[in-house]
Image (cartoon, rainbow, N blue to C red; front, side, top):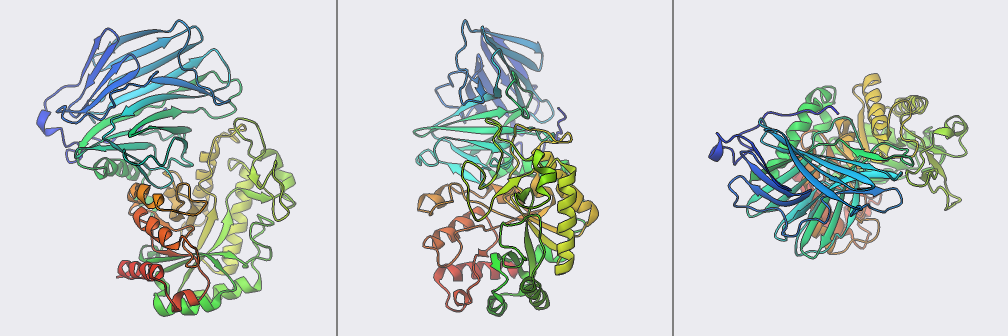
Length: 569
């Protein structure tokens, strides 16, 4: 697995100056392993992490109760291995910079390769798992954190797990679908610790969160590409640990800089039109029948600073019907003409992998419909076991070149008819592991990435926006709608308390988040939606087509436009 490294930065590695001459050390004492660098120390008892401290040992990040297994195996049916029969542990130093911990039982072998990186001062941990039983889904490395710690995760744009707040509870979040960037940050006593990965091969991963009162345990999982029915091995993903003086932003800057360098983001921004950076307000889920709303909007905010997501009544078909036919109707063309003359930037709504089951093209691509990893069920929007009369769409594997060709052609043709240089592509976050894991050598992550690269190749100046955002999709997207964790129902007071801006911080300077839902002034939780998105660091966004919302503003609406005005200035 290819990995990319950045040289150590003295500003970020704030503990370095105090022990600058310290060489990394790896010490084995029976089943105990201690690895120390100039910035961080980790102690293992067998595979269990029992201590994670800063270089000066003043801040203890690990919890007092080690995990039961340290490394565990997880299966497709939801079971985990846990304790194996006749399990035995060995710890062996393999070089001055590395040691290997091995746990063998009658039906499994689990190992951790632990090493010290002399350049970055990271402690590197690579889990590996082998099972006699088939259907192995992943191998996970478990790390418990002290009850006094706050855990910050780029999950669904950003969550903070505080010791005095039991919600959100346990969960497993898939990378990159829900876990937007392969890192976790822990804060305590003015210091922070980051565990991160620098994988560039788009291998599936997950982070498993276990809450127990004020304590949080994280499990970092490596998951092979499906199908996994006969799979018996997992691992090979390297996780890096380091400690920092300062809050979460210090390690997050390091990771953001790594993203920028690794994916050459400055080069990817070269063809962006200048107006992208001037946007200060977004309108989502606009309807082509709401031209009066454009007039009211232009009176209170500069059109040239306004981005509009057009989803309703602009096509010859209804919303979410007959994809991938995106033929604009007269109402849609008229709306675009008016908006363009006024100076607004409007992005029509497309979908990156959905096709209506009654569309003739479905017969050509149906064999490549996504299949669920654990049951081989066909996947789609309102697909079995539910059946709906309104729409039924299949999700097509984005690795299929025939599908990508079709979408590129119809999207560019439609944007040409509508005379727009921007497009919103729905569901670009939907890149999970599948039973038909690879098509044309690509998993779903690679297929989505390839689609966006093809758009950039054939029309470099096309402004792309998407739904959700992660460290793969953001590379070619200028804007993206942001979801809220557990936000499909009504919001309540707990939602603003747990949201965190780490996601928008990581994408700063390259991609900007916009709101998705709970932002219509008629929503009963509208004010909470405004607050959540403010805390998330999202561009001011309103979901409305009603001129009355702008002429008779509520307090929440005024708050949105005041923030937009400040951004515009």
